[in-house]
Amino acid sequence: MFYSIRHLTKFRYASPVSESVMEARMHPRSEGGQRCLTFHLSVSPRCRVFSYRDHLGNNIHHFDIPGQHQQLVIVAEALLEMQPWIDVPASLSRDAWTEIDSAVQNGDFSEMLLPSEFAMPTPALLELAQRLNVGRRDNPLSVLREVSEDIYEWFEYVPRSTKVDSPIDEAIKNRRGVCQDFAHIMITLVRSLRIPCRYVSGYLYRRSHELDRSLEDATHAWVEAFLPPLGWVGFDPTNRLLATDRHIRTAIGRDYADVPPTKGIFRGKTASELSVAVRVTASETTPELDQGLPVPEDWSILVEKAQEPPPPTPKVQQAQQQQQ
Image 1: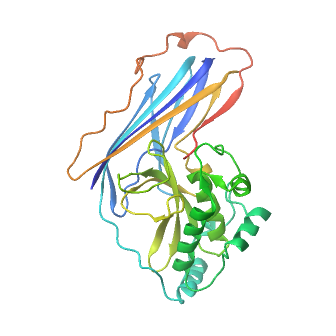
Image 2 (image 1 turned 180 degrees about the vertical axis):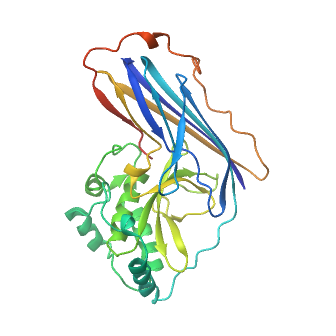
Image 3 (image 1 turned 45 degrees about the vertical axis):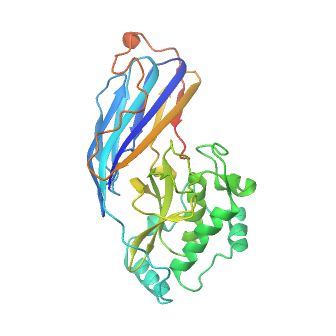
């Protein structure tokens, strides 16, 4: 199967800002059955875009726009090929707990076992673990299947019910959230079992007959747990799914803080407005990159005010997008 992706991100500012510094993690990974064939990142106002790979193999693009501007637009386009995923069994043997302990003892999994910024045990999380009967029993794969299904049943999916930096307690208290919240909750629960678990940022291709809860025009998040002898197995608690060839991976990390699609700051005392549009299309043969999302009229036009001096005592503010 081939997928084409177009991801449009637009920041609008109430008054001109003097500088924007941004990182983007939108380049799909090439590993296993997923292979990114082409990727292109366009930015307006025009600027030079640099890239590097971090220690987890994520492709990161970054840029700096030093001149004044009132709008920042980022368009990421990707074409990739996805091979069918190997079926995951319904369960593992009880010896799998011993295999996990041995792998943890002999491997380097500390990043995916220790608490992280958004995956931190709290009294509310521990109470939820008791309610859901999360513990070492039966076999690890069966337990994680149950945890994913229980999160799906326990929480209501409500877009924009939390914010990009909301702690897990907010979703737990209100019993509602988005994929970012559910991934953080599951990661924290799974790590409490001494199973390495990591956050996955990417996209979900929606088929018409699937009953996915996550939004079609947004990025997606799920988790992967390390389960010998299977390796890293993906769980999507938002949609009560195992990750399959519909799940397109762009970045992995301890939690959202490591892998946001966009992360940056701007200088200026002004309000900002973020809009995001995502389109994923599938084809049995190699498709063209999707051209269905609107492009602003001023695309690739340099900001005329770039040479004006910045406003006095500019304020540095964050610019990020939540995963729905």
